Image (tube, rainbow, N blue to C red; front, side, top):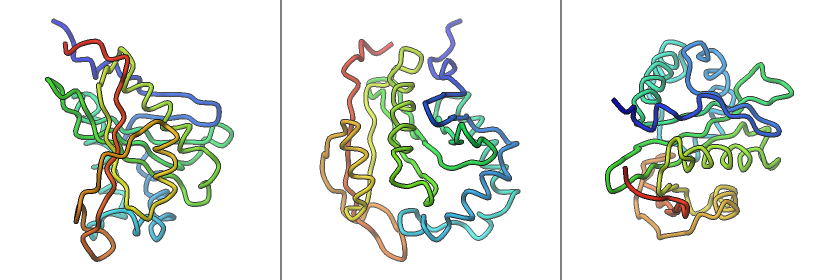
Length: 196
């Protein structure tokens, strides 16, 4: 029996300055701390969180679900740590809604600690994550990412990674009290060979 490709995705990636780790329930306190200290910063860009979002119980449940999705090949989330100070989580890269068949595609999302913005860390993390998604182990054909038009940092990092703007989706997500437009971007794996 042949295992699905996603089971071969690396559970740990290493870059010059970062460690990228797949979900593990033991990360719950660090993930909660990361989300808590960036709560106000992320509120401008993320949908409203449920009332119990900032609890260890919910974050542990999210991590357990993430572990299942990683194994099933339906989503791959990497939590980021600094190599020089690996004690805490400083960001995440998430490939969700992975669809196989004729589509071979996923949605990309990402967050970095507000205190670390502007240092090129997210670009470094995304380069590693995208390389993994386009590698022979995972072998996706296309990634799509959306950002609010005023999020110039996201626009710049996606452009630097080769994403092409493909349009604007009106009233795309309910964020920060209103339905918000989002710019849609896509990156195609030019090394993609064929659908398995």
